[in-house]
Amino acid sequence: MGRRPWLLLPLLLLGLGLASAAAEASEGDADPLYKACVEECQKTGSLKDTSIKHCMVPTDGTPADKSWYTHEPLYLQWKEWNCKSECRYHCMMERENERTQLGLQPVKYHGKWPLKRASVFQEPLSAALSALTLVVQFNGWLSFFLLLYYRLPLRPETHKTYYEYTGLWHVYGLLAMNSWFWSAIYHSCDTVWTEKLHFSSAAAFLGYSLILAILRTLNLRDEASRVMVAAPILAFVTTHILYLNFYQLDKGLNMKVCTVISIAQFLLWALWAVVTRHPSRLKIIFVAIGGVVSVFLEAYDIPPRWGYVDGRAICLAVAILLSYLWWSFAKEDAEMRTSAITKKTR
Image (cartoon, rainbow, N blue to C red; front, side, top):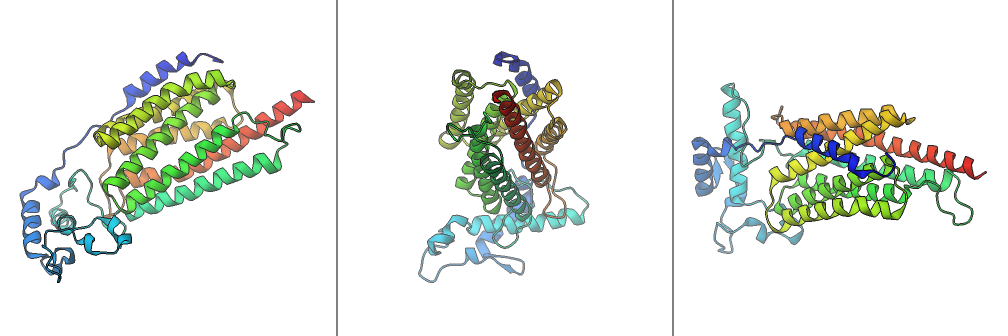
């Protein structure tokens, strides 16, 4: 498989065939009872015994329909909560309580499952799990860095590492931490900007992960081969990110693109682990299987349970273990390659 990137075509086609992320209509916001609740809430500024402070008329005479957060300090304006959004949230919770009493399953409202807030966190469990994954990623990258530069031997003439993929893994770590940081922010407060940053950083991270998978599994070490592989993927991912940010924030398209990229790299890693019989092949296969299962769990879009747990939260919980195992593989791979190279140079 040394220098034949075209062998990846069947894997990419297989990943495309497996990808399924059908967009679902939002039943909740089409419910007449929900609509009537939102309209009444915006008119009266209250819902039953609950007063919606964001619908109250300011004392300075500002019109009531003006966003409340323009009267708040600058550091609070990022929340973008207003009368309409608050009425939607409280009416959604009220309507879901009624549906639960009738034995009905949860439905989506404006494209999202009804999840309970906790203080300023819109999706508290997902936000916490994303933050925990960020910590695991940072710890994995830091231990990888310390291993290479303080525990393994360095080249005497340049003081660089023997491991040929050091730089690639460093970039991977930075993109991973950036992606999980914006994931935590997005689940804490869903606005147009946090959504764009979350989707963009995730697409950049997954696109680079595919590049790393191809370069490592095909053992491409010269710059020309790496550029030939990376250039088209970088061009596609960049175009996709620009499309999301400046043309249309298409969640369905983004899900399909990320699903195809994820499955392609997981299949590639799993195949490589089996063919090469890498010492860490069991970890690689476990991560590949876990990753594919997570992709399909998120695509299946499991309804929420107990008000906080949905399919995405389950995927985020799985990502914590997968992140730990993945950096463990990276460190073992670095040790193996360093040992093999130093033996040859003696």
